[in-house]
Structures are given as C-alpha cells and as structure tokens.
Image 1 (cartoon, rainbow, N blue to C red):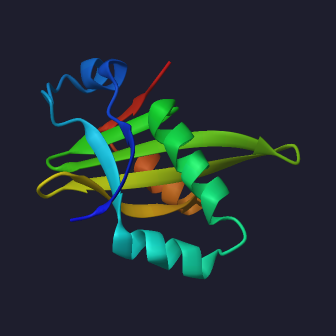
Image 2 (image 1 turned 45 degrees about the vertical axis):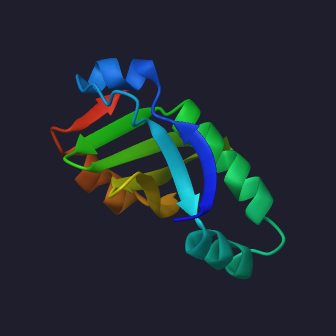
Image 3 (image 1 turned 90 degrees about the vertical axis):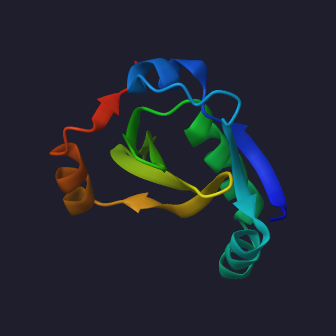
Length: 120
C-alpha cells in the first residue's frame, strides 16, 4: 500500500457534497499506478502528477458516489476547452483509479448525472 500522497479532499468539496469524510481525506497514487504512468509518459509524468494535484485541489466539478469521488478540471488549450478527470476509489484509503481526458461524449453522459456538482 505504498505510493505517494498527492492531495486531499478539501473542506469546500466536503460541504458541497454534504459528506463528512472525517480524517480520511487524503488522496494517494499507489506504486503500480505511478509505474504505469512513468512508463506510458516518461517525459511528462512529473508534470502529470502536478496537474493531478491541481485538479484535486481546485476542481471545477466533482462527483461523489459511495466510495468513489471524481474531480474534473477544465483547461483552455489553443482556444479550446478540455476537461481532465481524476477518479479515486476508497478501499483502505482514497486511491487513484483513473486519470484521463474527458471527451465530449463522456462529458455529455457525466453532465446528465444528477450527482455532478459545480465547484465555484
């Protein structure tokens, strides 16, 4: 259960979700996922980890379903908006399960969910 702690579920998100996570608010990337990320993107994985930290600290949207929380951040790149998501599942701690761009169709489906909350 090694890995690195990349952030926490902040109080503002807890209030918006109306969930009290207590002291169990830290977000981790385990060693297997770190190794996969480093192998897949050797030239940018450190920047990806920084982006992951930013997404969880300042999300534009958040979704919570029992034992799963997803943070979404929107970026303006070359005059076009792009969404990136970071999903975490709680097993013994909150661990990254998905870190990916969110395409138009995925966003449309997610946006239709009643569980998505805009973070102002």
